[in-house]
Length: 541
Image (cartoon, rainbow, N blue to C red; front, side, top):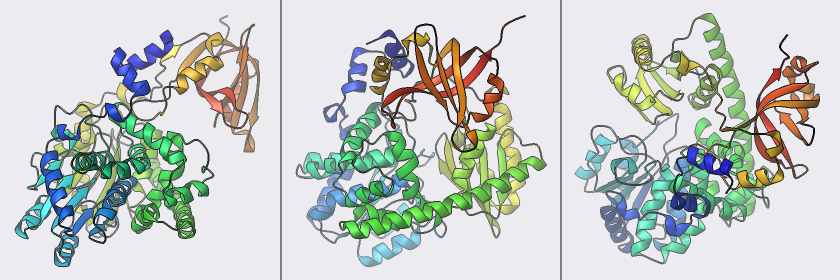
């Protein structure tokens, strides 16, 4: 491989020939044994027995894409081996909130369920685990969220963060569900084909949950995207037809920006079961109607989110934000997570948005590099009634009258942890190259690094003192900027999305420095540079 690609791999901690082999060519045979995970033996033994006895099993999920795909994977893989006896429950974000709830579990016990399997949740369900134990119901917890100091008393708990020796601790919730089913397939080989036929669901949930696309996650996503292109899942077919993807190559960004938001919309605004039913649907006509409904819900979600963002911006304009932005309003709790993400990107500091309802405040938090949200919230635990999450995202709840105390506490943590330099956004350029190195061969090499995502970003390269041959605004209101750049021997096209206002700075400029990604223009199948930043080179004197 070229020295440039070798350096890009090293930047991703791929530093041995074996690691590079797995990165480029890793497949099913490179996945670690599920039995390396603590709790797997017990979980597989219990689930095998429950299925063989045709016992009633409840699979309890979450309302986001990771949760929906986890439940769908469990049901699509196992239902034909236990017809009618596996039921599901998805909490509603607005009515129930995240995690296991006693009322739902009581219904399951009354229905006769003898086993409960949590997917993408459960690691902090202490009281609920105790209740099931009292009722003689066996509980398998599969989760990937940060465990607290205590672990619920369940028959089996599978969370890669509880197995320090597991090589890939950053699995998504659907990835942990996959490992449980993979373990079950070791004991029950006929499951294997069904599990791998639904690997597209694993890719969908893994990308949507923004976990690092390296190691095991990378293999699961690569295999899943291959299946997704020609999926036999009727609901996914309908969803892809809806966004114009059916029959075309599917990349990770299609999942992030086209498919996942639609599946997330139902959980944000109402009933997540709408999305799950789509993933389980066998009739194309019904699936297409469900996909249209999800598209409508997504449009509504965008409108509600815009209102929250406008109000939050007005609040910020009225006062100086701290190192952590903490805002509260009478906001729709289903969209504050996305709004927090956008504000964190815009202001480059951790953001916590809280939806006020009566005497309670329920919130979503998003962070920036260097500020571990879950640990920060742990420091502020005395002010919270509940919280959970990851390094970059978390959910929390507190009494309304503790809001000011919490704001001061979380900002005190930020004062200790965040320097002023950490609050300045930076663009990480992986390598400065000569403009003549920007060739179709380079594009082919970079495409081998896909799928891109968290942990494996699309490489940002830079060229300095490049000749600027031409530029013009394109798109509605000339909001984008198209350039022709190069040197005496070569030239290529670059596009800067939302860079239109910079055109005024380029008048009379002959050379620029630019940072960019090398991509394929899907319209003309030609190489193009997508700008990330540019700087005019002005002559000294």
